[in-house]
Image (cartoon, rainbow, N blue to C red; front, top):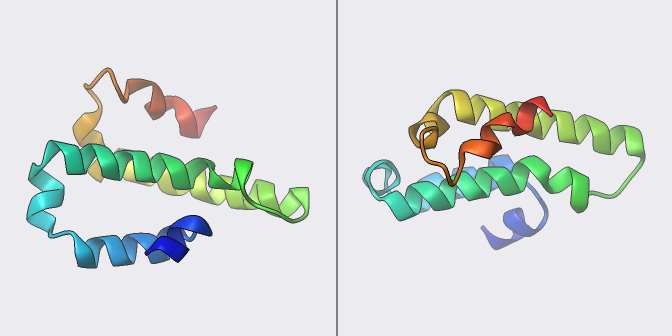
Length: 95
């Protein structure tokens, strides 16, 4: 899981995350829910800060990750939409 995190491999990371953290914990434990939200933010902005390569590829990767973040917000991430701690992040895919 650490290698996927360090290299910005969102899909691989969350595959391992879902295998390691039971759904009952992910859906009921507030700390786990907040951590998962922050993990999605990390992967959404990863290409902007950590990716290397031609600017066109970085931009493409950023768009892909922001779209994935938007999908998360529209589905599982909606649970924290009324929390002031996370409210500003709901605009991130549109900026």
